[in-house]
Image (cartoon, rainbow, N blue to C red; front, top):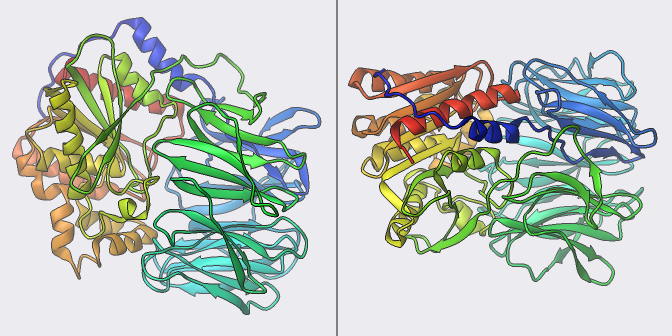
Length: 597
């Protein structure tokens, strides 16, 4: 590890501002019990760690339900609102068991001891039966546990599967599976909970997945809301699983859509995502009328229709922090303390690329172009950067950098073909799009090519390291957080669900298409790396395991390449706010030493 140049110091007021965005408490959209809608569960970091909180709307009493050193991300409620279910892993490794506790408070206990620890693969809770999915290195198991009875395995397969939806009367269960070999495009199977018999099956064939969203919340109702992509983007259909009839919901909207039911089953609450922003609609099933609910320009992270017909949603924009509000305006739930500082607006860019027009978002700092610029590339890869509030993005702008996000091929929100375009060539495909945006911004006079850095986490960390090795002339520094660095070793150590995903993405296992993995692996190009690199790694990460990162760091050390490393005792990221701040602080310090704005 080479000696580091002295770091420029940000003014105290700048440091205080960007840290305040992280420290301001946040809350998630409340989940509510189907039969007791006044009983709610939400996640919040008000304690400094993301935990689960119970909220009784009748009394307006809020209670912290979980308290663990590395936080608790996953929780839900039983339909009667009597029980909180939460997932207990170990220090962020994502491997664990479901726990339960009374809504009013009390002792935690293991919900289903017979099921055993695993990675979670879906949970459906009824009054008389619970269905739970588990994933291990041996594959997938889906269990059915009658209340007061003996849990049993109803499905077992080497390929990924999950528990997806349970009818209101708990007679039928929908599971998704990938017995055909590609977990990106799941098939659906409907099982009768009384005897595990198959009621119906549906699959749209290779390259077209089906996603069970939820059953209509009415007794005796067999209508299942399903996401499909028969016309090249995410759309909707309603499948009566017992009659085996379906009705496609054809909407005149350009982007991807998803939906949930209104509680009376008469309408759908539709979310529409397109070009980095989202909208919310009410779709009347009887008349086909589509009514847009007025929300400010920005991003809706989740929405729910309450029994009284009101719609609640989690909204933010690049400038304005998240808020839990009704669609018609009033704030529903706010964390205590001061609101975080406002951030910066994003500008849209559409750039011609090798696979079509690429959508990018840019943020300008103070001063005149050309700017020192941070390319913050998203993970996933099936995700997208958008016009939502991002404390990390704003921190780089506070420090004087322009920020660029590229929704490269592989991103969601631009149709199935764009999302799937990296199949067989992951890594180089996305980086071609990053390079096209880079070149366009240089030509525009926005970007100073001598002062550009690349950074990302997870898949974004993978692209960062791969970019440093395959595009060394473009980057003055790189910051890779929880990355894939040595793909062959990563495949050996990662969770089985990701191995199955990689086989589909790469066209086989490393034994079958080794050259494809080698071509896409950052360690293949480590000798070409010129820029200093900071690597941030989680000791318990099951997605981007530590051994393959150590392999890459060992090669940097052997070759005398300038690099720094920071390890933290959690998994694929941290739920502890001060730990997150520490990581951003290290990233900014590294950036300012090597790419000065």
